[in-house]
Structures are given as C-alpha cells and as structure tokens.
Amino acid sequence: MKELAAYENVDLRLFYGSDRPVPAPLVKDLTAIPSAQNVVTLVPVLNPHHELCEYRWPVHMICRGYASLKRVKQGRYTLLVYRDPETLKVRFFELNPLTADLLKKIQPGRLSIGALIENLAERHRPMDVPSFVTEAMGTLQLLRDKGILLGYRKK
Image (cartoon, rainbow, N blue to C red):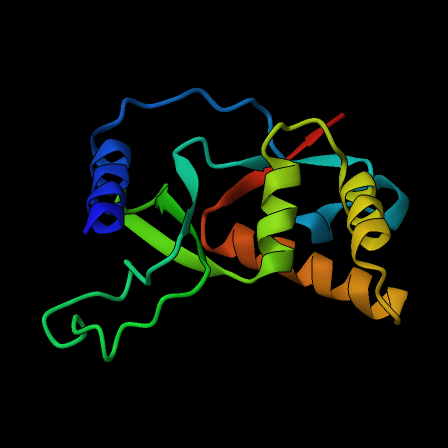
C-alpha cells in the first residue's frame, strides 16, 4: 500500500507541478544532423517533468482485477513517470535495467550521446559493440518519440 500511495503522489506532483524551463534551442531530429561525428557531441535533454522510481511491487499495474497477492508478484520494477509534453497527461514507462541506467546517466544533463554510450558500454560490456550502439540510438529515439527526451542541445 505504501508504494502505491507513493506512486499516486508522484502522479499528482507531476500533473499539478509548475512548468519548468527547458534550454533552447533544441535539435529535435537527429536525422537532420549531417554527420555521425556531430551527433555524438550532442547532449540529450530530458523532459523536466519526470521522476525515475523504483518499486518492489508493480504499482503501475494494480487495478480492480489485478490486486490480489496471488496475481501481483513482488520483484524489482523501475518506472519513469513523466508528464507528456503534448497532452499534459501523466504517463509511465516501465524500464529495463539498461534503459534505467541510461536515464540515470542522462539526468544530470552533462554527458554527450557519445560519452553516454561509451560509459554504458564500459559498464555493461556488450559482446557486439556495433549492435549495442544501434540499440542505444534506437532507445534514445524511442524516448524522444514518447516525449521523455525533448531533444538535444549542443555541448
């Protein structure tokens, strides 16, 4: 119950929270950047209306038909709760450990795309680095499409 109340509190805080400034100008489309060398120097900018949360219970799934202890399994659930910049609705995104790690590294707003991917590759030691880089870029695009990343700024 405690985690469910905390989750609902995050939802309300994000929904009613005041607007926070976003640095401008932002590059919104990486395909508009002429070279890969320029892309890796950009710094991802997160939606300022978000919270990265970790729970032992799947609070984002609990509802009338999914609330008994037999159906709800304790585990490790990492959620990004954010306010959609277009609709202003509060949404959640369940994260795998690698995406959660990526978001933790993006949050301070200092690392470029290249430094983020290099840092994650050192930490997670992928067997196929080119595929890892492709997946990381795909994850950044997914986060951008969902409104979690607002764009990229020049370093």
